[in-house]
Length: 277
Image (cartoon, rainbow, N blue to C red):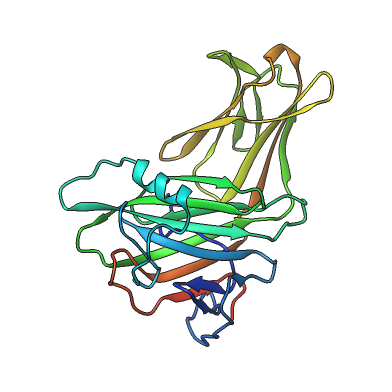
């Protein structure tokens, strides 16, 4: 979809070395921060936990690590199977993002992407921190790449608010009524592939006034439009009284240039953020 892995934070820890933020358009004025996680002005903290080929782990600047940052990440890296073509190999980048509850009072949404990305997995710990791993296919000779982490922590904007009894359209966005498929309640949203990067959510409210968040999503993309299928396993179509589709922009980011994609290949990692210098 986009290039470089996405991640959020202002001052970032790379291989045990804290690096200050640079401006988004010019990479100058490096500021060395105390050791520890970096922070954006919004309070979002970011850490590149490590890079791996599935077995060996190393820091963003290529220094070998003694195993995975956490047992869970190590298991996830070994379990993820990705097919490759001749001349390709697979790398995984682990990211941790915490803090920075925005105007919505919710934990921020995080989007992590990189060149050749094939998929990702993420979860939140008991402390609310977001932990994710992005998987990418890279050319065999590629030693370094760009990683970007975007964060959405602002207010949600309601795009559509209906009773779910029929299809609705608002501008370029179209939404089906409440459907049933494979024993689940389903709503499908179609929207243009162009436009700002946004986090999307669809919530249902039942006739008793209880809100229901989607329990699964599936995306189908085209050149001009994408469809997102929102699934709900804890409410029946007949019990739905309200459907609300909302978005919020990914308006904060940190970009890492020169992240080592193989052990020992690192060097100077350049960092830019949405905060500027």
